[in-house]
Image: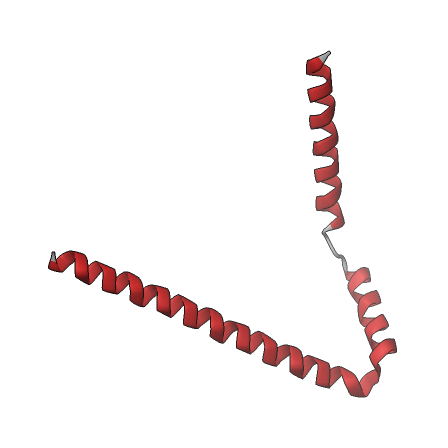
Length: 86
């Protein structure tokens, strides 16, 4: 009885995971529909401004990521130099 409950829970979990994975895939028709809705909501004049703002946000994110990566690299190099000196 206990084994059946565990097995049924596992099967339900696997089924839900499979459904979630298939729901995560966006096809061409869905993208087209989303773009159409954005065009209707914001209009043709507002979309370039939105994309410009999105591009600036992505650039800032990349700069911050690169800064963190270089900081981590500097710290590891410093720690390696200190280990060699010992």
